[in-house]
Every structure is written in structure tokens, then in C-alpha cells.
Length: 255
Image (tube, rainbow, N blue to C red; front, side):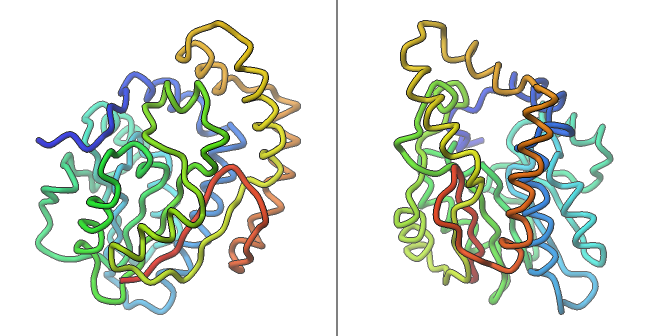
């Protein structure tokens, strides 16, 4: 099996599984994904097909199942470690496979990749493969980390290959054949905090993995405040407003 993971560390699944249900970052991202997925399948006949490529531990697929109730939602991941956690969350249609060898006889109406593309060395090649997995007129929903200037110990520990600028992501999507319906930064309230944290972290001498694990610790007060602040973005993003800053990018593209 060709490893398109970019060296993703399956050991992170345990930390993710423990934090995702309550951590503001994951909750906010999932609400945005659910809103955009609901819009993407609106008007499709029942029985439409939705694929989450790189579904990991099943955190997002639950929201796809809720927002795409009349469709068949499938999760695919390279790592069995993640799929075991996804099964614990009740995900049923799961496939262990590489996108370059995707074992599907039919194309999908919607494909989602949520903070996956940055792990893949040949991101342009994988976008072309995803393009071929879509029905003509089908929709790609995509999230990635933004701004190379925010690169830090967390990206290193997570085995990211890159953080994206808006223009870079737009160019790679278009080069793969996609037309872009919507592209915006998001997680705007987090940007100044992350920028400062990344500057200060450069003064510390702990290892990248140890420092990254701190990102999953939940401070109840901070978590509650950020839930409110970032949650205010969701209706704007659902209406496809373009936000002026953020730590991540979200895109809706069409074959």
C-alpha cells in the first residue's frame, strides 16, 4: 500500500479521541463542516454518496451522517488504528485504503478531506485522484491549516508537510481541475493567540511531541470562551462569507 500519509503518527489517535468531543477547536470545525455538508447535498436525490477521505477516528463522520441523512456516508482511512476508534463512535461504512487505490466502483457526490491534505507529500497528485472520485458536478469539502508563518512544533509533531496560503490552495485546486465555489480563512479569534504562542514557543527547549500534547489539554474557562467566539463564525461561513484572517482555510470546490 502506497503511504500517502506524510508520516502521520497513529499514536495521536488516542489523544484525539479523548479530546475531540469537548475541545473548542474540533467542536467549532465540526459545526462548520456540518453546515457546509448540509448545503452541498441540498437538492440531491436520496441515496447520494458521501466519502470522507482520511476519516481517522470518526470524529467528523458522525456530523456528516447527521447533515447528510438521506445519503450513504463512507469513511476511508489508511490506518486501521483510526478506524478502530471510528467504529467505537458508531461509524458503519468504513474502508481501509489508500486514495491512490480507492476500491470504489461508483463515484461520489461529495468528498470531504478535513485537515488531511497537509499530511500528504504529493498533495497535488492526491487532489487529482479525489477529482476522479467525484461525480461530474460533485463537491469537494476541504479544510487545511493556514499561514506558513504559523508553522511550529505542533506541525512538526503532527507530521505536516506544509501550511497553506489562500493563493497556494486555490492554485492547487484549480490545477487539479476543480472550480472553486468558496474559499475562506476561519478560526479568526484564534489567529492572534496562535501567532503569539508560536513566537513564544520558539524560546522553549522541550521536544515538539511533548509541547504538541499540551494542545489537547482542555482549560474549561478558555474552552468556554473560545467556543463562544469561534462559534460566532459558523453562521457567516454557512452563508459563505469570506473572513479576513484565521488559522485554517475552508474550501468548497466542484468537479
